[in-house]
Length: 105
Image (tube, rainbow, N blue to C red; front, side):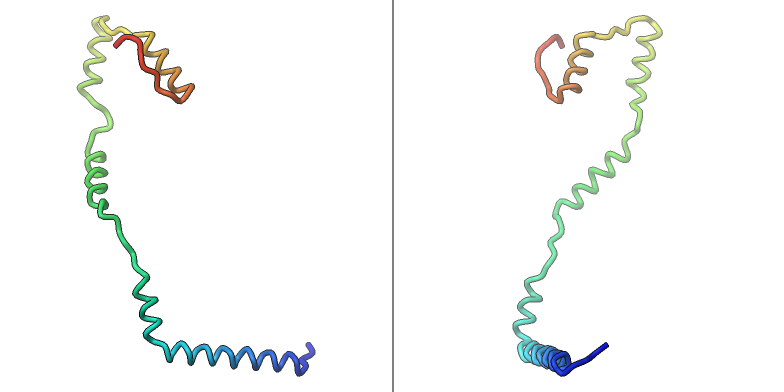
């Protein structure tokens, strides 16, 4: 590796510039504190609300047993009926990604 005077002068100038910059920074502490005061973090005020909702959802059972039992009873006594129009509408909504109104309720 060959080191010539130009490389040495460049390195010295770079070092001197860094030292001058550090001195300037030390001489201006007020500007630094102003910049530091501008940095801040704001947490969501809705955090507790979201946590409450999350806890409520987690406390809910995965299976609605009363609904399952009612459907089992309807299947057992033969009174369970599927409305083909509603099934077709839901299939179309899923396929097209839209919600259509109409049909029987």
